[in-house]
View 1 (tube, rainbow, N blue to C red):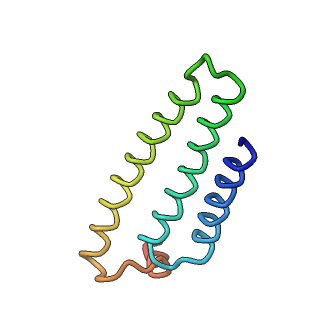
View 2 (view 1 turned 90 degrees about the vertical axis):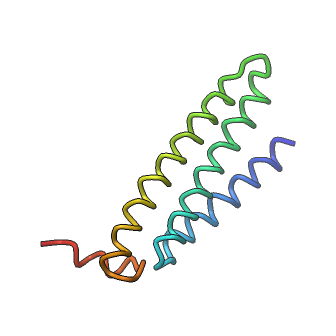
Length: 100
């Protein structure tokens, strides 16, 4: 059972990594990052379940990771909305022009 869960997590992480490397849209980039964080959460909970079932350390770390992901999305989307108001697009390549 642990093998299937780890394979699911590996698939999610790999898909997220592929999304980060290939996406040009910042919204797609956020989705890919969320997939990678969800893969880490699945690993926390799965390994805790099979290595120390009487403890809840994995679940607690999963909740902290979810809170981190929510904060990341909140800040990232706020920045994205500001940039969209100024530039009228969400292309990652156009953000290179922010350098002075």
